[in-house]
Image 1 (spheres, rainbow, N blue to C red):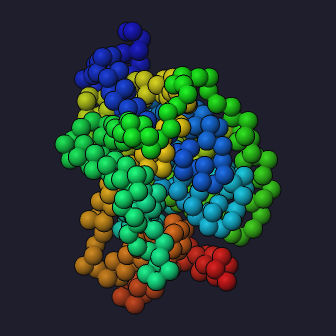
Image 2: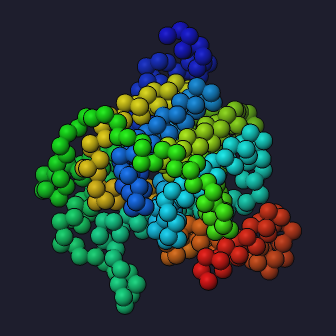
Image 3: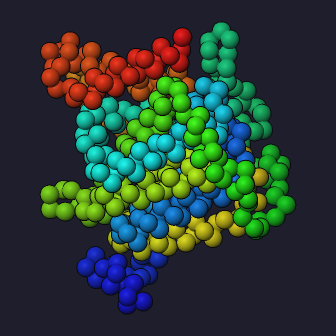
Amino acid sequence: MSKIASYFQFKELGTSFRKETIAGITTFVAMSYILFLNPNVLAAAGMDKGAVFTASALAAATATLFMGVVAKYPIAIAPGLGVNAYFAYSVVMGMKVPWQTAISGILVAALIFLALTLTHIREKIIDAIPYNLRVAIAAGIGLFIAFIGLHNAGLIVANADTMVAMGTLTKGSTLLAIFGIALTLILIVKKVPAAIFFGMVGTAVVGLIFKEIPMPTSIISSAPSLKPTFGQAWMHLGDINTFEMLIVALTFLIVVFFDTAGTLIGLTEQAGLLDENGKMPRAGKALMADAVGMTVGATLGTSPTSAFVESSSGIAVGGRSGFTSVVTAGLFILALFFSPLLTVVTSQVTAPALIVVGIMMAGNLKKIKWEDMAIAAPAFLIVIGMPLTYSISDGIALGFIAYPITMIAAKRGKEVNFLMYSLAVIFVAFLFYTHS
């Protein structure tokens, strides 16, 4: 016990074994919904739910353990929301790319991620892309996944005359989703810890009571096999041989880049762990944790990992050291034996989580300089482009193309980094290539 306290600097950080354990449990409960939500999202791409469940748990455990032991931060990592939707709905379903090839794209992005992190180039690339466009990407992803959630709930449906319309509200499945949305929002507003998780549990229980959800045959079982997904990313690396797939890999890289970097800074600031210059100590090790998680996840068969903002719940109850992450990682391993509960987690159960997380991510809209049209216009195109094109990459492309144009028009072309000009050219080619 004393060695643990010494290694994780409990005394220096003003924490204790009890505090860190409670914080680790709190973080896990707050983010455990991803273990059941991620298989549902990736199943839409044709992937095996059980294999994705196991891959997600193992990738989360590996990355979070690395974060705790090596980087020593109370921050958990798991397959991220938004980028998994991009994988399933944009790449596989929208672009008709086999999931095996798409997951190879994730692996390529992960390997680039590792190289950039090891060489410290990652921070320079992030700095090259304007802050307003970064937060616009986060907000756009929020609107995109909220739109998916509303569709999965049956509240938004296709309409030949108006493109989209309100769905039939008298259907049992839609009423269940509406109940789940209301319950989750009430819990969020009441600031109940792990509100999303308990919202999903409450929705599932009501669904079982009213027989809208089938009763699971068991609760505990051995971990589902990884055989359907394991190693597919490496076997299909040769398929990443077109301009289109290279852009897909680049998009995975860009989205995870911004998501993780922003979350890490925000959480370490919340925990009071930034240094006197406002910088994050051991930033390279923290970034490496995410790179490792993404590589392991692609190999096992799941979507890219990222630092989870739900780690703030553990920090809020006192988590300050890496031991918080060690506890969370252990619980991800334990969760492997509860896969039968997957049958309970239907699209109606997960829809409220998608919508609520979308609302949270949309909070980034307030960070955009709307009074500056040269910045506001490309940011708006990113935000609105993602849900309306049903594609994260297309939304990013619209904004990145518009940005140099509006800045040049405002006689501020010198403020645009050379990389942004290069990305604008790449995305023009990308749009014409994918939509010709």
